[in-house]
Image (cartoon, rainbow, N blue to C red):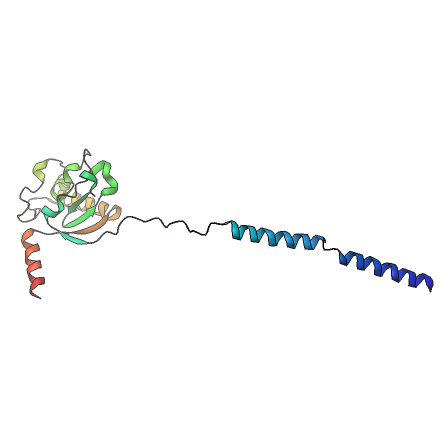
Length: 180
């Protein structure tokens, strides 16, 4: 029995010595995880990066030929033009519609007749900004079909930011709103 007791004492001593050391592989791994978590938590900057601001929202509004005119892309202004009473923001196409572009004469104007006739001539634009809008009278079915194609292209590609009305219609609407 001496041998058995001696062996029990030896095994107990082995277990006691292995338990008393804190440097077991499991403890080292756990300690590493704790240090890494603490380091990554306290080393971060407490300030969140600022949120980037997008472009200002586009407000749908009513334009007259005269109030649409300044939106021609000059002096950093956005570029708007109207097609059959709808005002499109074509600023993303600044190379085409902005100053010096092939369609620049339409910027800030009603481009309906010029687009329908495939003409960039200034005589396609309404001269009297305070008069009635172009009714597109005299355009044939081919011109109206071409205009509809342009309108569909703009509707799919650009934002509609307003509607174009004559000065008389605008004044009538404002007077009716004021009377209420």
